Image 1 (cartoon, rainbow, N blue to C red):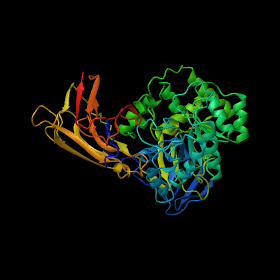
Image 2 (spheres, rainbow, N blue to C red):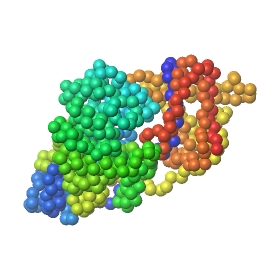
Image 3 (tube, rainbow, N blue to C red):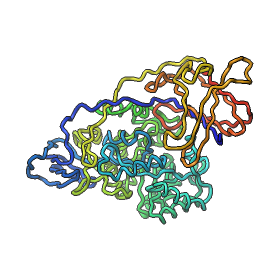
Length: 570
């Protein structure tokens, strides 16, 4: 009991009401014909064809199909039919797969999430009646070093400190349902190191073990020398283009020789460089009403200024073009929901950025459709041909001429069933401007605070874990003021869940639909003490729209005296 106590304070806007889509009242699914439409099947373009769907699958593609009685027809003149998009790099949790399909992304390749989340959706992807969310493939937990990238989010994850741990790590991930393995690597020769990294020998052992299990291994890098070492060792793909230098002939030859691919994630790299596409995406009328409040906050969120020279982004773009010209496969991935990105819509932004880097519109479309299935074991997703389940997007326009036309979505189908897009309430949130003062003195009850919304129990049971917690207001025997109370937090963190926590959550907004404006405050102070069985307390602060904590504060305890109270100061 009380093995470890983790206190989590989360400031975010949570649950929003959804409004039904009023347009396109006639439903086309399971059996229908699309006439005179421009088709891209994931690998090849056809200017004007008829497409027949019967029993949820593509039945026939022909220049002219005969009329069929009792089969509805849809006029595709001036429109383009595309396979459902595949985002080759996301981090999926909560409503990610709902948000993705709302913008025509019918498959997500997750690169780091909780196995419990992944497992539930991996089962659904094999079900033909799964037509309301995107399909999910996942790496589950990434391979990183103690203190390495992926550990900064305040949760305990397995890490590697020696090569002899690699085989077991890979085995554990596969047992947890990993479709492929992801590692984070930074070479010793690299000029900069933001986090500790696994060693060259650990990466080599991971690649060997993954391939012994017939699994791909992809590597997160942020510089060219690390990418060279990873591909030379046999990694199947590189995640992220490079901000430090443009690729050279040596790297291009390595990629070709190893038949490796790259997922550039220009969307998130633009955001890192303070050049996020997010605000532009929000401003487009045909996007705004399909974005939830949370998604709009994600698109407005920013990374810290890392001081990287502005010309670094051009290096990333130039590298993509050089690799593409050498026929190195380019796969489109957004890295949503990092600051400045969001599930679904940011994949469309990635297509635009790929064309800005120099790819043709058709190459960009290929990177988000047929190209992905040529490397990842995802079946025939991303293609449209006879016998394939009809997961597809009908576009009002011609993305071969103007790539941003992919955002002009007319209709979406998942497994042959039309998906009715969700329209969100676009009313602005009422974020009350907070003044300095006491949050609570704990002398009332947990549901009464001087500002904000109630203190509540918070454990990993929310996400499938088994940790427990109990909150109680108890007389403070150490206080000189009679009747003064404190919040006593007791609980147990139970193993078996990858991100275990036990503590309490507090929202500064007046309700779950609204955040709080903290601009008048310079600090929020929490004071706490714990007993000998409490070895750590963590406070995580989140910017609305971002899953990356803007602050993580950890503290140890050496006093038996326990009390906790919170004060906001100007």
